[in-house]
Length: 165
Image 1 (tube, one colour):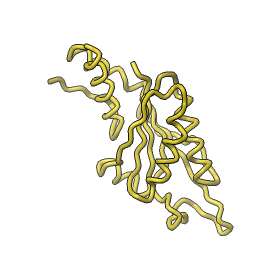
Image 2: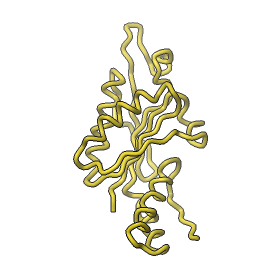
Image 3: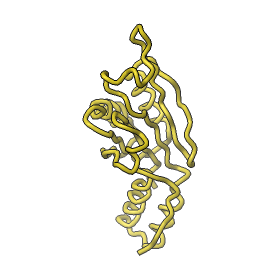
């Protein structure tokens, strides 16, 4: 057994475990797999939309009287949160998230998560936009758990990505 500080949270930690498991499957020792996990942090990225994505909750996202929305898409890398942009529609937001992931690099492993049933269709659309890309080796799905869901809220969609070793 080896304890590793991944320096990340939520599915970012799972990315480290995923990379370490791939290393073990390829013949790495426990120490080598731990080094893979420890070195992965600067390569992990995330892009996400916080809660309130379902149409009934548009006012939480800044809907104006004419029905235009302001959907902020956030990013995370090296423990820093940033704003990718604000988009007029959820379609634009999901497209920008997919583009951001695909531009992350070559030979990517990707995880698409959603918080609840209201955000599952958006996660489906995000997965559909990412999966066919030539540089994406694998896409897995996950549910945003309570440890992160308490911060992101219902209706959240998140995507983690990292380059495969």
